[in-house]
Length: 238
Image 1 (cartoon, rainbow, N blue to C red):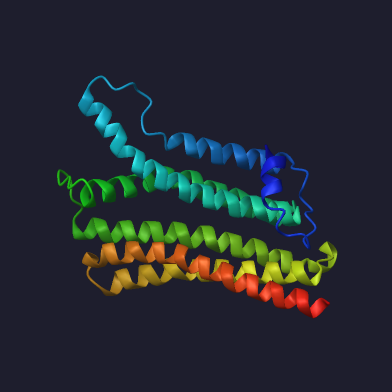
Image 2: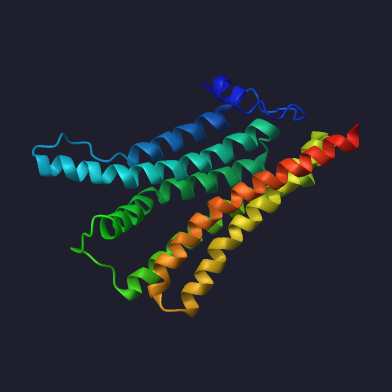
């Protein structure tokens, strides 16, 4: 399975994949991600009525969005270990903290998207969060996102500190620095969101929520800029 996934990332011919052979760390991490995905399952019971069936279909949307976010985190995790294959004490500790945050935020993540979809798209007003609850919810998710991207930033920072022992070529060094900058940017977004939450009324909640989707759109711009810089780097080597 991992070999097939690895073929998907063969778009980096100038990168020497030092972690092509997975170890117990990657296996344990994949098991945690798989378990987290299992916890997101819409329902473990067979519906007994049409109304219960429709409730399950409503949950598909929140399940899909939550699964997508979980996949993006796993993808970043997979690429890191595929590229560098570092398994020293510092990376193992950071990896454990990352997995702890991921599995801890599974149910809160599903709650967030279930609540938003029920209230925004299905107009379900049976339960409405008050201003204080909305404010706390923003801070909870801001901290989670800040911690996850912060850990990825620290992992790439550690790679740069050990670049001599890894013998990174110019292309690999560029990719590592670019990944560090990307994760720092993504880390600052939730921090900025939390600051806005403390300065303004929590009716800003929806605006702040869509700000998180702006992170995804901005990452696409990062990808385009990255490709331009890579082309310039390759041309300079000729």
